[in-house]
Image 1 (cartoon, rainbow over the protein chains, first blue to last red):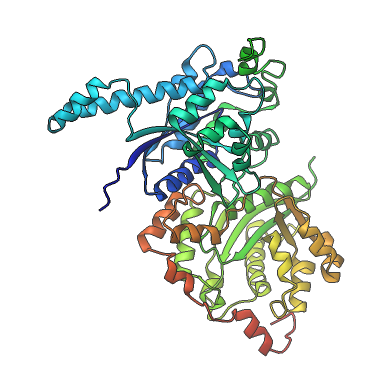
Image 2: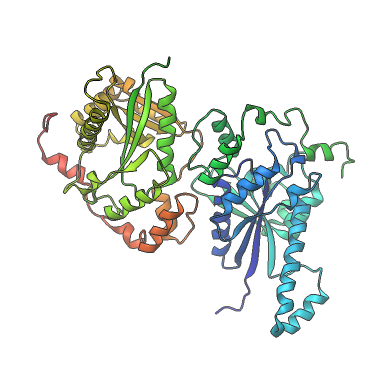
Length: 268
Length: 257
């Protein structure tokens, strides 16, 4: 048995989940398979964090519904769960802050586990001393699609220091399709290039392009979305009459929260 | 008052090795499309797994493929599995399977509607297929000309594709299909979804997750019976596909066999 240690990983996916689809769930499965295949990681948890209503994206319906649909979708999973912290914040929260929040929670809960383990007394002492220090054996990684990676390049969508924190201090797992080239994008960005070791590209050989936009469109037109998302989520949508032409017009004339926040701020 | 619609049943023949969410999507998309023409009322869907004697590489036993389809379709209120084709002693031509089901549907329909009500439109049975299906007509020895004619001329096709123009081109490039183009319905799936049974089997062989590509109950079944391994994929490796053998031998039979 080799002496190298295995890093425990928690995957965090941020997004609208408007609504959640089988594609979102697949991303977790693909990411886990990929990371564990390297022999260096063990994926222990997946967290889905739907964005708050204050994000002001066009067609974004209330967080309470998006949370419940996500919860229904994760019911059949024994490792992926939904988290409501981000959606409950009154203002839009930068992704880096969400990552920070969950990482801190992770460290705290791991410490509690170590505290009760009396055999690891020495380890407990060490952790108390390094309470706020990052651990090598535990990582939180942001799980996303290639579109999020490429959004790093959109002016005023991200603060440079936030990108640096996410890919530098934590990690990124990016699910990509055969037709996009994230490696080129990374190559063209000095910041991403610097932290390329923390960016894991997972190629999705079998395109599974179930976009939430497409699902909402089909629902508006009374077309079937069966087998694109879990039956329980479809049932919930029908029960509550979500996703109509009206709901798609929400925030139509409003500026997206990050753009609003960063435009007008002094350039960094 | 709504115009009278033709009652329509959709039949999908194939390996279903295993059945996936994508197979079940075909039915949903086809139903929506045929309804939107205003001429049809889709009243049923049939999944008909091919028999073991088809000889395709990697084909697992029909009893498993039928059981998995049953599990997958448990939650559907209009699509069912039928094992008639899989239980025939030899591989059955698609047209023969269609004739069998059509006779059955007609009988049931006449029984339930009543012979006195002649004003009702007779039910129809059409073959539901994917885009690549039309291309198989070109493969030498795989199809009899008279069968293709009966399939597209008499029954009809509902062909679901992923937004590419290949199916229209396949029709254009075949005189027979072109002649019958009014009986070939093209349904577009705008969501690019390449989840195929081949990919699912590949993932399973490699110990990778297939969750959300097919129903959990089917995944459980696969693991319980340890289907889809490197060995199972080698089955029939050097065999010739049964239709190629069978149709090379037999003389052309009439429509009433």
